[in-house]
Length: 421
Ligand code: AMP
Ligand code: MG
Image (cartoon, rainbow, N blue to C red; front, side, top):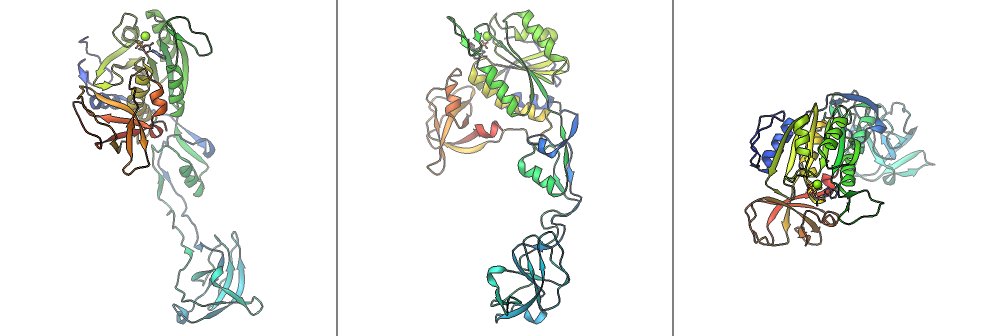
């Protein structure tokens, strides 16, 4: 193994076998958060990363209002909590969007959901509880009434001055709606990061063509572009490049000035046909990590100019899994996300693990929700080339190094739908 030490924007580290946690920590610590932001219309902010804390300049609701269609009343002191029947004269009508007149003691106004509570009024009755009498000029109620019923007080949802959305939040529909509810029409979000990609391997053929002997279709190109699109990155795709040192250098040169990050797949093993390592070394800085992980070892990390570089393994499952475990948190941090690490959920394994392995494994599983607790079933073929395992699976179960267990063991589960969001 190469003993070279490489400066990757963090402390230099030896080329020994790294644990996943060590590799992830180094990677995350060196991720530079994008410093440019833009103000954009609310409709365009879905999934973007908020660049500033958002404060409310108004309270919501900004006035006391009715939670019901019904009657708002001015309940007199001696009428509070009286079980016998009460009658109120109707003196006003207040639809949503209008303001009523002050309500005299013992009087009622027809009111609709969201309409402001008029001066003097102190409680709202549901229309179903009120009987209209005397030619609809009065209502009668036959239950004890308390003060403040069915009134949504001013500031119930948001108080003026509150931070309603924190910097680094990835904006979801409810976040956008909350901003709108305080009257904000534009939000400041971080610029999208630009990721350049290319794919090594002379055996690769673009789908749509016919395979010759020894060739395979380039599937990583599609998983990677889709993964990056899901993360909201701008992708510059150079497609498949020739397995030569010069072609690899050329591709890096093209991407380095324009992109924040370059990601490649394949060509990071120790074979003579693997040119990623020497090309990145020539043009920038490189650290080839052998990580105690399956699938996925090795992973390459470094920089070319000001552009970060991540070289994923070539096998399709390894490429996807290492992207999700390493590149995804790295990218999310670069994007300015405050929550960038993958979230693990505890799940029971529905399989035994007899043979302790030296590397931490991420196996493809599907959850069985028909039982409690939910159990994870293992896909029978766990090879790093078996892409159908990713399609079948709901997620990955993390199996610690040097461990054995019986069915029922509680382990970390990483849902694919969570990691793909
Ligand atoms: P490498 O790391 O280049 O030695 O590639 C490891 C394995 O992954 C080989 O079997 C390659 O054919 C395969 N592979 C590499 N790149 C791709 C790709 N873009 N799509 C599908 N398989 C690939
Ligand atoms: Mg190759």
